[in-house]
Length: 304
Length: 304
Image (cartoon, rainbow over all chains, first blue to last red; front, side):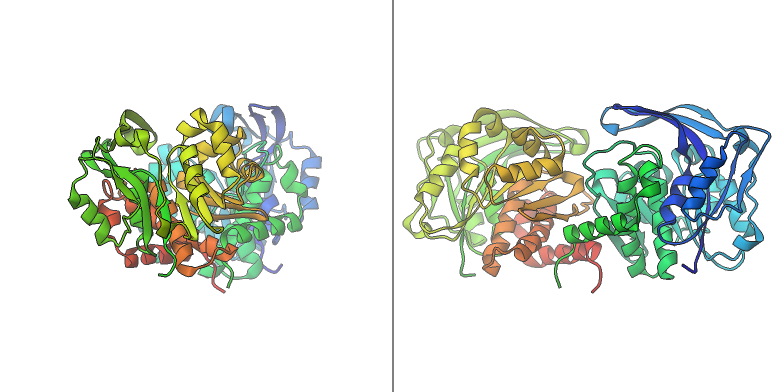
């Protein structure tokens, strides 16, 4: 585990309402999910901010998974970011019903000196200017994966377009890639996205699986068929955290490793959504991930 | 090409309305699509009936593709089966607006002596009693693939349940497997289906690809990403015809061959839907199919 992964994103308290149950004030945020997922592969370096309501017990949960917290600011002047979301019947869509930005309002990610040479960087979902600001502080030429959401495509398209030119890999879902490129057909949209700057892109397509777009072609891994979906929150963040964690652990970013990482990312995200919050992700273990990767391989690979 | 495939189903005139164009009185029917698809792999033996309006030019089109027409009855007392269907915006659903059963009303499939020992049988979409009646006439122990549609699940569930116990492979789409088993989760529905009798099942899932269910597990092939969908009619029939044609051509029905057949079926169906009626399927050539199979393999298979 020589290669740490720098991960910037939110650490938050979520309130999540699903058709089956409600979780109030539970641990969430893109950096939480991504770091926990990444922790099964290598040391995540968390860059984020929490407020004066962030109980040390939560820090302990991160530490227990070997997450480096030097880059986690604790801002005593306010409360942690909090978000309330509600999933509809069949988890087909999600509605944000409340957002309290709190200490995230003035957050400026400051990268600790010890993180600046990290060769693997994940820019989790935060404003694109902040994602760029993180990159500005890095030394060397890291492999950079970024996520974003529809909010930034709507409100911050210019800074987002500037950012994505600097990326090794942009990870979006199906709706986001259509929104960002204006191209309806997802495969054509994925190719169009590559013309906009990132070296590669991943489009996550729900039941249709995840597609990696690289300059010469595409690669697809089907969705892992979750029997009991409990809470889809954090699926994309843990997907990305696992993806880059796997790459850092094998110390390779060649096409074959990227394809394998897609299996690991799919497997990890499928485990995340089987429980509320980070509950399952936090305790699941590398073996459970490997077992799902094996299953996905058996579902997709021909012999010899 | 030693192993012919007996294929029973409809030969029809279709009128097809899509959001982009309309095709009037064009060649259709489950046996037409299935036999044309199968013809790229081996000799299809067509068992069906047409009426006094079935121009010899149509027979010529079948003959040109090497289809054996000894089992195609020509009933001079009436017209051919005809069907009118309309696809909505985005091809998300289809509505039947007219059905003229015509000569199919009294159709009793009579299997020519030369077909009775065929080792590969496809029971295309016709009433389940007729599908069983075909099996009753077969000698030996053929590999039997069957299709059906929601109509028969609604109206003829009992005879359908009797039939599926006798099948090597039942091919359904996602909605049909949920309807037939009453199980909402598609993967659980697929497993439940195997308990109902067929040795194996395939569930076609649109954008999520096609899933093969066998006693020990599942295997998945993603959808081929068609750039211009023109007419989805016959996708399932050509999928099945290609699947069983491939098996007959390699003279094997082991699991590895079934997995490979899933790639061929997916590739062939993707070519079918790029033109109205059988237009593309009829002239496409084995090479175009092989090229899409190669593409699907490159999208899904890891090296080594």
